[in-house]
Image (tube, rainbow, N blue to C red; front, side, top):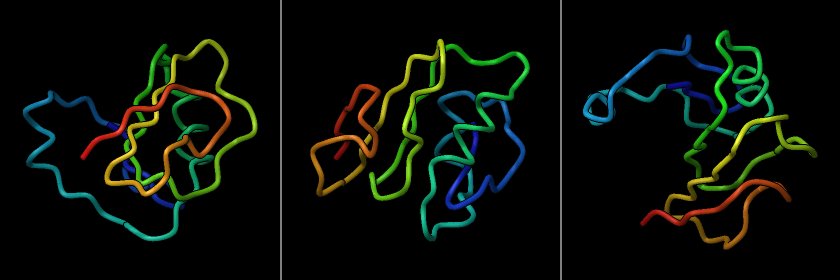
Length: 93
């Protein structure tokens, strides 16, 4: 789990799906997807897939991370498309 708003808020942590309901989410302000995606790209081991939960408003990199499947999980978003021209989109709520 990587918590990001305009910057990475906490060190990445391994969590189970059951942990997600208990985790406090700090930040919550302007959104810039680039620091989070850069942090994902630099992890060791590097993930081969990512799900980015967001309302979709923010600045995304022009290009997708190499060799990483990417899903934009748009939560309660008023937009129908991803914040970038790459990645798959799912609508949540």
